[in-house]
Amino acid sequence: MNVLLGISGGIAAYKTPELVRRLRERGAEVQIVMTSSAEEFVTETALQAVSGRPIRSNLWDKEAEAAMSHIELARWADVLLIAPATAEIMARLASGAASDLLTTICLATRAPIAIAPAMNHVMWANPAVQKNRETLAERGIHILGPDSGSQACGETGEGRMLDPDEIAAIVSGLQVDAGATALLACKTVLITAGPTREPIDPVRFITNRSSGKMGYAIAAAAQQQGAQVVLISGPVAITAPRGVIVHEVQTAQEMYDTTHVHIRNADIFIATAAVADYRPVAVAAHKIKKNEQSMSIELVRTPDILTSVAALESGPFTVGFAAETENLREYALGKLRRKNLDMIVANLVGAGCGFDRDDNAVEVFWQGGEQAFATDSKVELARRIVKLVAERCAIT
Ligand code: PMT
Image (cartoon, rainbow, N blue to C red; front, top):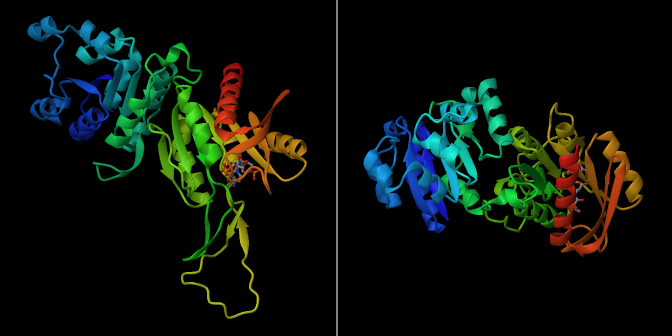
C-alpha cells in the first residue's frame, strides 16, 4: 500500500517518525509531505531516514516537481493520511483551499483520505473546529480520533493524536476504493460489546455470561463494510479485528463514560454489550470475610448507556440489542419504543442459546418493519444485521 503521509504543524508531529515505522512494518511505502509549520516540530532528516524517501514540502520546488509532480503524487497514493491534523489544516481542507503542496494533493487525489486530529482540548471543542470536522466527515474523510488524556499543554481532555500504532492499524484496514461497494464507507460506527464487571470487594464482582462474540462479529462486519469502527469492550477473551479501535472497560459506569467520549464522532451506535443493570452501592475496601450465615448486598441502578445515546440531540443512528428469556417480540418492541431507538435486535438467551456460543438467531425490529434471521453463525448474522443497519440508516 502506498501511503502519502501529510504532516501539519502541531506538537504531535514529534510522533511521526514512529508512525512511519509502524506503517512500514505493515508493508506500506510511505511518502511524506510536510507543511512549512510541521518543519518547526520534526526534522526532514529524521523523516527521510525512517521513510527512505526524500521529503516533499514545497509546491514550487521545480526539481522535485520534475521528478514526481503533485498530480503524480496524488495518483501514487492508495491512502492519504494527515497526522497530526491541526485545526488549521482541517479548516483549509474544509474550505477546499489549495494553498500549499499538501492541500493541493488532497484536492487532486481519488484515494481515501484519513486525518488524525491533534490539538488542545478547548480548540477541539470549539464550534468552528467541530463544524469543519462535520464537513470533512460528510465528504467521506475518515476522522481518526482524537483520543483523550493528558496533553502537551499540561491540560487534560479530548484532542490527543491517536497512538501511532492505532493509526497505522486503521490505515492498513482502509479499503482502497471503499466507496465503490462498501455500505458504510466514511461512517464511524461505535459498538459496545461483552459483559461489565461490577466490583463487590477487591476479589469479587457481579457479571454475566456474555463472551463478546456477537459484538466483535458486528465490529468485524461493520469494518468489512468500510466503516471506521470504535469498540468499547468489557472483559472478554477474544481479539478485535486489526484496524478496529478498542477501548477496554470494566464497569457499566466506565462503559458509559467511554461511550460519551466517543459518541460525538459516531454516525451509528450499536449496543451489543450485556451491561449490568445494577451495581453494589458500596465496594468493600478489603475482602469480605464469611463471618455471617447470610449476607445481603444493596444494589443500585447503573446508567443506561443506550437510552442516554438515543436521547442525544442529533445523535447517531441507534441500535439496541434485547436479550430475553421469554416474550421476545413483546419485550423487544417495548424497549424499541421506551428507549426511543432506531432499531432493536432481539435474541433469546438462556440454556443453549444467545450467550457465549458461536451461533445465534435474531429478530430485528424498527418503526414499521421487522426481519427475522434464523440460527446461523454470529459472524454471518453480524453481516446481515450490519447490512440491514446500513440500509435503514441510509433511509432515515
Ligand atoms: O457476548 P455473547 O456471548 O456473544 O452474547 C451476545 C449477547 C446475548 C450478549 C447479545 O446478543 C445481546 O443480546 N446483547 C444485549 C444484552 C443485554 O444486556 O440486553 P438487555 O435487554 O438487558 O439490554 C437492552 C439494551 O440496553 C442492550 O443493547 C444493552 O447493551 C443496553 N443497556 C442495558 C443496560 C445498561 N445499563 N446500558 C445499556 O446500554
